[in-house]
Length: 165
Image (cartoon, rainbow, N blue to C red; front, side, top):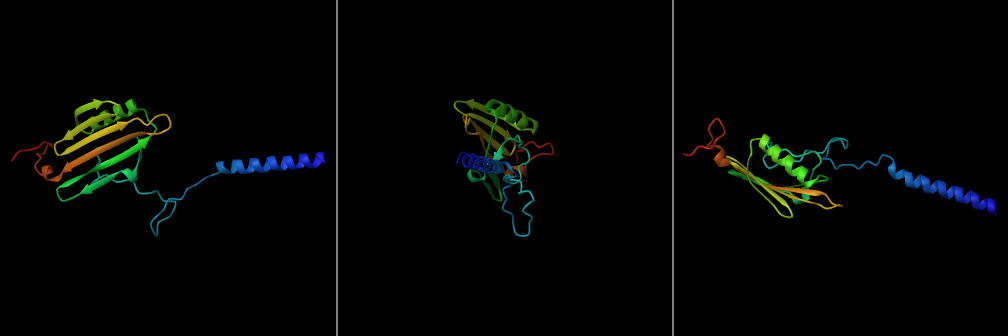
């Protein structure tokens, strides 16, 4: 009887080990792809409102599509974009300030309370950012609001400065 118990215990321990380790083996999640696309192809890069190329974000942040939205009309582009990631709030603030300055944005405001708000402008663009701490178990959130006045862009001199008419 004792021999059968030992055999069953060994079999049970083996099954537990196999099932617990099977979760570690190549767990691939398929990304929904359009018809005709390979499921192994990369998903499309999240687009900004009108392809805003002068706002650079750290690679640790992931786009939250559910809470983001953009608008594009004949005279206006803009939107609200939400990104989240495991980053330190002050590190993200320093990164964003430096990144925006490197892309010729002028910082016109900053305020701190529970969250940090940064404001930047260009001749025909405005960007306000809110950095929120996520806590020990959640991610830091960066929400930025961008407005681009397309009509103002037509009245710039060759140096990118606004021209009054």
